[in-house]
Amino acid sequence: MHLLPLILLPLTAQAINIVSSNDDGWAEINIRQFYQALTAAGHSVVVSAPAENQSGTGSSDKTPTTLTEPCEFNSCPSGSPATGYNASDPRLNYVNSYPVTSMKYGISTAAPPFFNDAPPALAVSGPNVGSNLGLAVYFSGTVGAAHYASEAGIPAIAFSGSTGSQTAWNVAVPAYSQVYAQLATKVTNKIVASGTPYLPNHVWLNVNFPEVSTECASADDFKFVLSRIFSGLLSADDVETCGSSRLPTESTVVGTDGCYVSISVGWSDKTDAAADVQAIVLDKLGDLLEEEAATLLWRGEATWVKLRWVSVPESKGGVLAEREFLFREVGLERWLNGLDLEGKDVATRIEQRRQNMEGRRLKLESTEGTGERKMDSKSAKGDKEIMRYGNDEKSPLENVSNDDIPYSDSDDGPIPESAGQIRVALLRGEQTRRVLAAI
Image 1: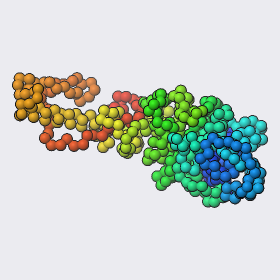
Image 2: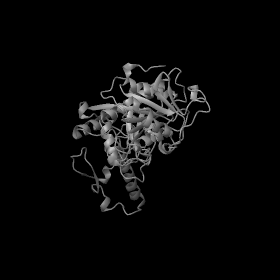
Image 3: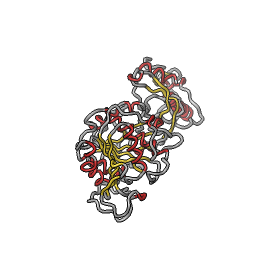
Image 4: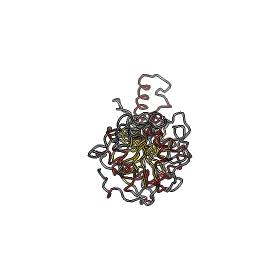
């Protein structure tokens, strides 16, 4: 058996009773690593998971039956009873049926003897081998098990990871399995630390980890983003956070470079919970999400822009900090900090393009005598028909002579890409604007 380094998993301030399941099987390495991580954190954990891989079985449920072939990875022999446990650790239970059935058995039968006949305080499922994003939640057994628990009155969290394949519990532990166990324990501990009720009734969390790679190699490399399961194009507003009332989809979050973990708030029908419920979860997750002031909200190709100034919460000093954040192109008229993807001032470049076009139009009309504007008294030198803003927000509008309009016959170059809605909570408006303007 390979134990997680205890130094990475300090005891949580509050230890609770947890039932654990999955759809990859009781002998798959991810659930065993998670079991060890939660136990090392001080929790009392009982595993109740399928005897075999039951991926993709959703919310299926049937009475367990005697095994007609060995459990996965030969972890129990053919002919074993419908339910059983590990002889060396009776907290590890198999159920020869679906994930939902396994979770049901764990809640009602396997776990209570270890919890002084009390029900589990929390249910966890996974980490699944492979992501469970969007429509996959309807078919995932990992999600199905968590969903069942939430409907049975037990707050539940489903965890899934992009990296890995079906792996036996008794081989050298892959790095990804350790990382996912640590991340799942971090989320679990945060929910536990938030106090009871750990989640609202009928709510379950869908947590998806991105790939473990050289850039995302340890649990400390990952950041957590509140997300939604499905696109919200036809839905009511989400909880307002970071200046927006629309959360990014979990597929967008996990598919973005930068080690982002998605946390979606699921409801009893396996869709997204309403904004008021999301708000409760947002509050419980607290500073687990505060590390990232930017959220991924808009359609378009993702482009990394380095060294952007963002605000740090007052609880962490209330200062401005430089960090890499993801910008998304959302069109010319949408930007929050006034910078394009090259760090140049968008407004200045757009105004220069507008003036170039206006200058060429006036020159064309004066030379060809076409259009409504001709070289007459209305367009003579010194006329001031064009307005522009001053150098700062306190400056008045200025009149500009037509002849003062700079223009070029050359191509204007590409339309500047908008920095597009980087979602930053600005703590000190005037000070922050001055800093941003100086970048």
